[in-house]
Image (tube, rainbow, N blue to C red; front, side, top):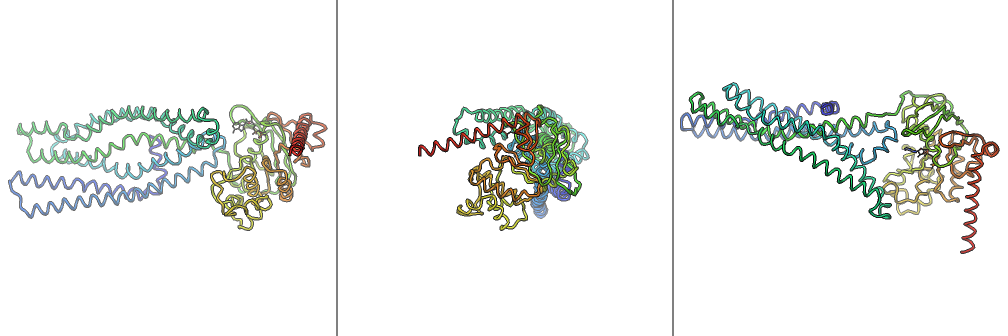
Length: 586
Ligand SMILES: Nc1ncnc2c1ncn2[C@@H]1O[C@H](COP(=O)(O)OP(=O)(O)OP(=O)(O)O)[C@@H](O)[C@H]1O
């Protein structure tokens, strides 16, 4: 129930509209009872005098029509206000939760998967609409109106009051059982829905591989199992609930269950007046409609409560350590001090210490999986480290806000994600204030301009989902253009030119060397020939820093570096030989 109550925190800003909706729908509910009272008046008059005047009948009928009209009008106006409050709240929640995502470690986001977040942000938050737009404004009057009706019946005759409540215990017991069982089953049901969402997204993203390898892939099996699992859990949940829903749905609104037979008996025994009996009967029946509507909300309460709990856990759980100070940096010197880090249990960075000086280029080399990219990701604060410190000009990066730190760093990663918008806007992400001319000039430096101009719509070309209308090399050069446009004092390039052909790579390297002058630069490279001139080279091996120095120094003192260099030379020779063979056979 905690989650259910929590929703009101999110709707606080719009409580005026919710109160208004509640008041209007309450009025509508009261107007709904008026026709029953007027009808009762006509019947009583008829029973007492066996005659009713036409004028009186016309006035009463007019009253019934007016109250029905007002009932509809207040209801419509009430729903209008409640829907406005509900959709404003949904928008606020979606914006708030996505803002919170910035502070969630990237690993956690990747582990949960895009589908799971989509479910949270779209479906789970949507469930709040039912609560704010319907349950509060409609549900509460649906409780108050029957209470008012029962008070009146008690006032007429307390025995009739008791009898008219007769159906409630028979209806409430199955309802409570359903809610209790539903709450127990909710986690499994919810997890299966999340799992299905994630596997659907994974399946669609992996369509290329699935088409090549057919239906036997694990991804297809996982997809099928998750869809089946969701069906099983949903059916399981509903099967259990249906019986109880049918029981309380049939019994609770049957307000005359005891009142009709026992009241009739009392009238026949002469202990009850006919007018009181008819009045209570009519009033009791008018309570049936709001009771039925109220019941429709019962299963939603359980689901909604669980969903809000989960949303809070997801978005307010693990958060990156972050500061809010406006830190003035004098010198962009960076220090990794005894840094240890594990994505999960196993440490992938072990007690690593080194310095990156302003106005120098530091390269990180090592075998695949040695921890190079992880060091870069720790510097951009995608994760919190387990032990040690990373400092910029003596300030721990945990003291910076995520935005502030990002302002200071240009990071070209191996994953060159592009948004499905124009090339111009994709590059402008580097600096949202940049003019079109500045974007084009960055694109020229990154050797993108020519291929962009060859496209039909030039810079206005949309790049497709995740940039799938572009080649790997083109995507990479566009992300380099972003970094050039950003012009931050710290530059990290993780295999920035890996997809680039040698001719373009030379040009980009030339352009980058101008760009990086005076900055703190970190380059992660597999092709060691690109970093032989680096001011410092850090050699990583299985998460440990095993040596550092210039290329020349390392060739002399580091066995590992020499091995890496030899194997690089071998690859270069191999590719030169392959080129010669190609020429021979051409
Ligand atoms: N998101 C992640 N979750 C769990 N483990 C990870 C994750 N990313 C990387 N690892 C593990 O951390 C270790 C270091 O990976 P990292 O990507 O830093 O290596 P690398 O030296 O950059 O490799 P490469 O040259 O192949 O890019 C590897 O064992 C890898 O399996």
